[in-house]
Length: 238
Image (tube, rainbow, N blue to C red; front, side, top):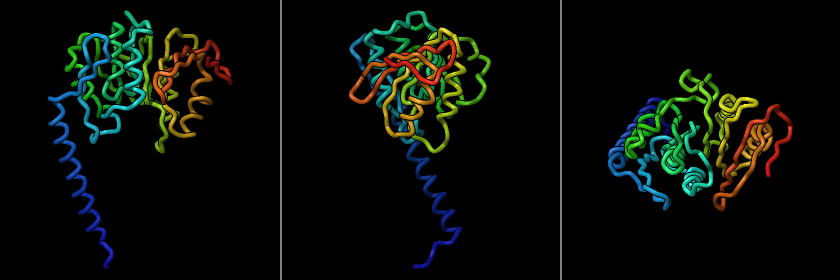
């Protein structure tokens, strides 16, 4: 068996990329007009389009589903609040906050590549008057339109094991949105997956906040956090 030449590898990679692109486009075309329905038993169901083969964030994840279900129960008072969802993906959590908890304004933030899908899901739920999609890259300076203080920062499935070094960038952005001494609340849904992400949560993120935790599914926990007036080395989680 002769080894494949560099030209052969390039040709094979090009073919695989082309086949993957075709599969993504077919899936997108099929799902764009056929969204999934999520009925949490609390008012009008949510309609969301997902394209799992497109990007990591273009699919449903367990913490997001659990958090949306928890918000639909009405136990958290977000009426009239200005909210921002970090790493919104499909926008499930932010849309749930707007629909079921009557948040005044919800910004669904994610990378530029996710903007068309976020905008589509806003339109599917007729929530353009309440929700908007914005690009936010973790670790970068906040865009001018996001510098105004938010009442609540929503985040689900944003802490996971990664080789790309995204967790320190996530921390930087969270601390920008929840500055020391501010009244901004962080609602964070988390599912442990690896020692790395558990260490980040307990040793890097939570020490900046006073936090109360509650289970919202067999695997997921919801942390309600408020930034401390001064940072400390040990967090308080009840």
